Image (cartoon, rainbow, N blue to C red; front, side, top):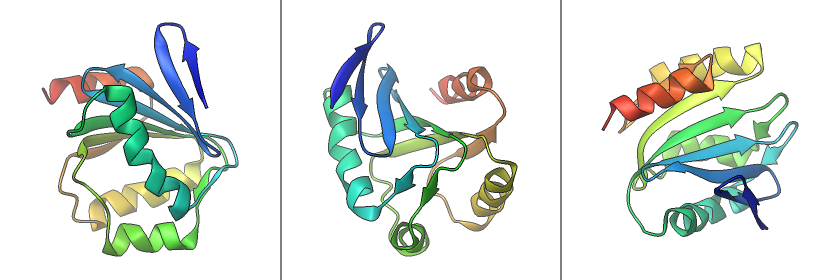
Length: 133
């Protein structure tokens, strides 16, 4: 489902709202208590290209709201087959303290092919993403 939020187009999926921040950045907001499955995640790439009007590599602001989680097949995917061809950088905001702790460890353990950081505010995350230009 597509809608407009201010001047920005938003695509809503079962578990997320996806929108364009600027020419190089996408915002993915995982809904509270959402369960992201591999089947759904695999549809996101096309939505990114649709919002940006082109294929390419993009920066991502990922906001994980309270209770949002991924299913086991998606977790295994991060370990073995994580798609990075369209990712330039990721900045995360995570509501749950436990999820924040898990993500901090994951960022250190996973061999990311692009910069990844965890932030406390959206403003700080966007400033960091813009600094990567």
